[in-house]
Amino acid sequence: MHDLTADIDVFSAWERFRQPLKAFVLSRVRDESLAHDLLHDVILKLYDYQQRGGRVANMRAFLYQTVRNRIADHFRAGSKQQTVEQGYQMLADDEGGDELHHAVATCLRATIERMAPAYREALTLTELEGWTQQQLAEHLNISLSGAKSRVQRGRRKLRALLEDCCRIEHDRYGTVIDMHPRSNCTATQYFC
Image 1 (cartoon, one colour):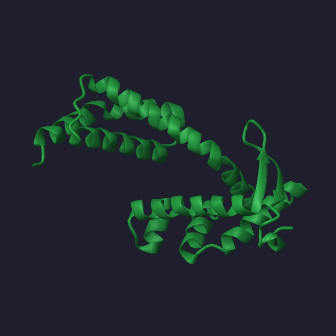
Image 2 (cartoon, helix red, strand yellow):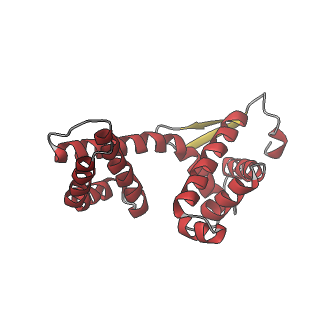
Image 3 (tube, one colour):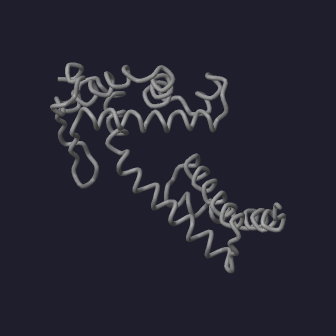
């Protein structure tokens, strides 16, 4: 049987803490859309926790600790994604630049072209042409969450393809400093 009191606790907690939590998250990530996504994850965690029978003694402490953990997870995942995002920027700005800049841009372009059409279109429009995910959703006639999912899956697939074919080195700040094709890569002709 569904526990209605858990829903009320989640709803009242969300109403009470939503704005301060949003300000807290925005002070750390400085991106409205990302803050919304992180807060969405936090409220889902609270709801799931209570649905599994968990009771929260201090709702404020629980929510702030959960949001801190979610922000930390985001930045950990983000540091892994940073190389790909730098590559997108290099690809978008591929007019000039040094040899490494050109190699990364060429590699990204070729790798995106090899992706399934749905992911290729989503990444090309959002990452290279600067469309918002809302614009992508409207263009594809899908929900915003569907567009976000497609972009995220596309990014993960692109990263996996790049890591299969390239050894990308970066400094401690995440800046790309070198790139070498792997010997087992069958797509090296695209960027070497």
